[in-house]
Length: 251
Ligand SMILES: NC(=O)CC[C@H](N)C(=O)O
Image (cartoon, rainbow, N blue to C red):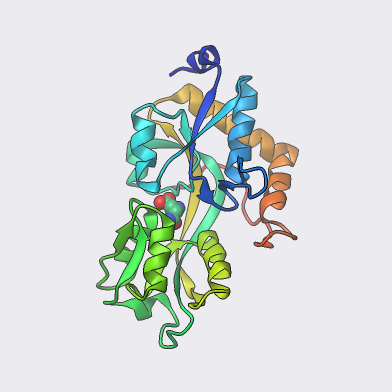
């Protein structure tokens, strides 16, 4: 749909995770889907003068839903990769993430991702983590799950020795595991770094320009840094400093 179609329709539809704190997750009190990526989508909706509608999508459905036109953009932990960049266009990066491995605290012989060579690991189906597991850990064919919860459960049940995923997802799961029977640890070093952008349909130049203009505006005004601090800064479970800018992804 063109920008005019979206204005006529009267809503901007953004595909998002809904399960990934603090990017897009359910607020325990209000039950609304909130988060960093939701704020970014809201800014685009505001720029178009229409309300934001969130559509929750699984990791493996992100690119298919976008290509099929069932969402206007995808803001769903979407890492840039050369393969994906053949299928869709990417906005400027709005986050930069590490990919790491979560293991059981009790597995003392597992210190680095390389120690998982030839072992079983889990990953979310259709994620860059699935591909990264194959690429960066020798002799690994990941067991995949539709949702992060399944991949995490497999680790806790001892069905796999590691769970490859985005760092902040693993940070939250590690916190969750700390009070369970199976505490977890994050292995260092990271497997790889990935810039995240909003996914836009290939050739939808008007939408791509609109999103980039909004993101660049948030960067220039300092609003992007404020939104970052709100979700990742001191007083949040992540306590992070911003070490990237919103800018074009250098592929
Ligand atoms: N599982 C994950 O790490 C989240 C998705 C991942 N960032 C991707 O782009 O596929």
